[in-house]
Structures are given as C-alpha cells and as structure tokens.
Length: 183
Image (cartoon, rainbow, N blue to C red):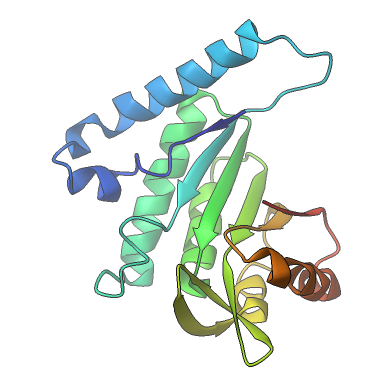
C-alpha cells in the first residue's frame, strides 16, 4: 500500500493555501493507508510507503529550488511521513539529480528504508531524466550517480515509456546491484 502523499509536502500545499496543515494531512494519509491494510488482510507482509515527489511544482521549469531549499522541503516531508508511521520512504518522479540527492539526504535522517524512482525520456538512443515530454540535460546515469553510496535500498523506473523501460532497467543494472523495478 502506498500512501499518495507526494502532493502533501509543505511546498506543494503552499500553492493551495494549506501549508499550515502539512503534518495533519500527512498523518491522515498514513492513517487511511493503515486502515486499508487492516481492512484487507493479506497472508504476505504489506508495507506502507510514504511517497515524496519532485512532481508538483518542481517539474515546472520555472520552479527549480536550489539544493538547500529542496533539502529542507524533503527533510520536513520525510520526517512528517516517519512520524505518521510509514514503513519505507518512496522518492518518486525524480527528474533532476539535485532532487535525487536532496531527497535521499532528507529521508536518511529517518532511519527508514529508502526506495527511489526516476523518470526518463529517450532522445537519440540515450535516456535522460525527464517526464511528460520535458527532457533534462541529465542522463539516467547522472540521476543514479547522485545517490550511489547512499541509504537507497531499491531503485525503480516510473513514468517512462514502456518501449524505453527495458533499456532503462539494463542501464540501472550496470551501476546498481540492489533490487530493481518499474511501474
């Protein structure tokens, strides 16, 4: 079960005038995920992943926070999710190596396992970080290099065209020895 909390960081809620409810809304999302887990028993373990994303507003080219601002936002969001009781931090929709590094650093303080998912676009046979037709000048390898040697325990591709996913997984496997996935 993944709590859909990528829109509940202070930076995202600020645009809706709800930044003063950041912790409350994160706790609500996790509580609902826990209730879902209790109401749908499974014979296999079910973890609750608290999602942090660089999607809104950070994929907007006009909104590019520097490292310190990004780190502060990710650190607060990770702490909110940890306090609410998630089992793992899932960093999603990464399209800048700066965000990958800042999000992992911010989440590391929680002591929880960290999973990271990057989004890619293909151009001239190479995979670049990007999503929704907006390509960055950083390659998939740049994004992975930003978090190598960190506390990341699983790596994924997401929002990457299905015809590019196999190439992306091969590239990840060349530099990453941990669990891989795609969604």
